[in-house]
Picture 1 (cartoon, rainbow, N blue to C red):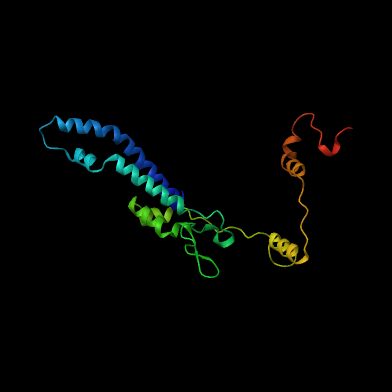
Picture 2: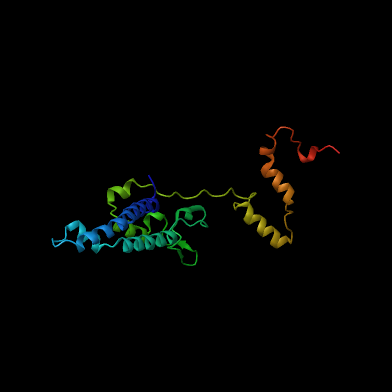
Length: 188
């Protein structure tokens, strides 16, 4: 099952599909109504009242809200499931919404698309991220320990060359190619 964000996206996709089909039907209905002296049917009135172009604009507005209220790609550790659109608060930048499924904006959108408590209970919940491995003996991640060391000691790590990086990344795939000779074993 998708999370709340995914469920809303599915609902919008369905509404858009119907609205696009109804766009073609609207012209037919309006032409029929023009030439009829009979009363308008409930279906015809509904199509006239809910112009497909207006429905498509609402779907686009909903997608814009979804684009802002999504999993924060820059969040880490326990905040990995936080809503980016709700942001953070306080001196410690605590997540306003710890879990994307608890985002008030998304819950309002979901309500407009017919979510029930039963459906909400079956949706997946984004999970907290995993903590990086702590650095050597300091209980903090390596990257932070390295950053402190470079600042206080005035040293910087020696970065590998682009060639070395490429070989490290591509090496396993290159070894599968018949006749490939690793760069460190090249013949003179």
